Image 1 (tube, rainbow, N blue to C red):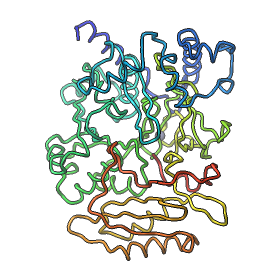
Image 2 (image 1 turned 90 degrees about the horizontal axis):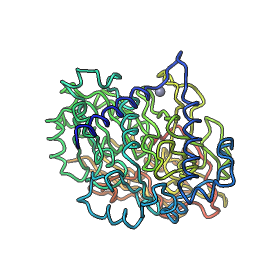
Image 3 (image 1 turned 90 degrees about the vertical axis):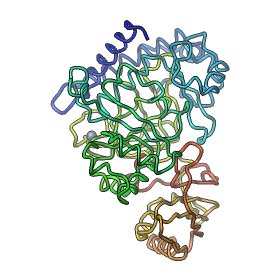
Image 4 (image 1 turned 30 degrees about the horizontal axis):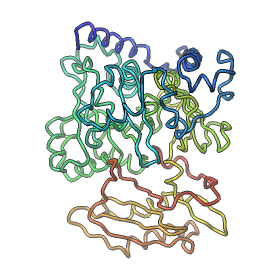
Length: 488
Ligand SMILES: [Zn+2]
């Protein structure tokens, strides 16, 4: 990179960072004005530059229309029309697919300007997401300004220059998947302020522990299952991060973070675990709260509508059936009212941390991975806590996974801690007692499998609850319960 390009990137990063410092109690909140301004600009830009949006928005007055007047967008629709969605008319889906098929291109900007990533295929068809360098810098700036306890004055803070923050990202091997994007496109101009190391859950355990002990990170970001695994290594005395005294914060992403798991990680390391909710289609959607388990919506960078099955808004405090996402900073691939089947609850109360940005109280896995049972011909959700509460009794347990294999039929897979043994009959009794206390002992059939290890799926994540049969046949989402129990 030339010196002028580097200087302008640094200037852009620092300017955005200062602008993104969140409004706090007692301050004037300009977020909604910014949101409105960017929303109108996005609509005009999409209509004028993307043939797909020209057809969709051509008859709508984009300067005055309500958000609800705009059509929603499914992933399948976006992918089927991708070449026409792009506002850069030279972009072609086929060329993008060829580019990401070659891992030598990791971290390389496509056509010198575009960062590429794809969503995980485990939730159906993968989507491709193209963003330009400005969008990438916005994502980083949001993370630095709002997500980490990095000192607020980023550039002038000489302390960080001498003693930069040290961050570890523990996910999977490099690729074009969303959580890798942060590393792939990490702006080189930010390197003096943040030392970054990447680790994979597929690396040998001893190697991960050794590298962490040597590096002594200030921040660790990873899948919940990787943080949980680190907590076990810390408890066993092999990992020594607490002793090093450098660790300030951990951040869980991409997987649900149940309260008991978060507490275990916090107890092991003595630091707060933040919980962020974002996706490839909007990496800067939210930043984990440093005080609670929720995540603050970056409502100047994105619009998140929590809606029921018919796209009608649900009140704060109530879980929706899905969300509609509008990304306000990606102008290359406009994403407007894009449907994502996450079950999100916005908080009805202001957050105790003082940040005025709206608080995402909880996010539960995609509807597809919800467990459900059928009683008297009606389906209802089977909350995972009936299993989790039971498993708290088994102190020799290292890992578990719950599979729904049929209507009212479940398999609990359990792996013991090193050198320990588990008895399947005992585990089964714990769970059956828990089910009995919910009046479900006669409804649920349960098998227990003892295994050596629960392997992550090919995306590197361990899914604690896996529904192998899909949602109930009537198609309606099961009755939500205990929304606050699990946060993603
Ligand atoms: Zn907060």
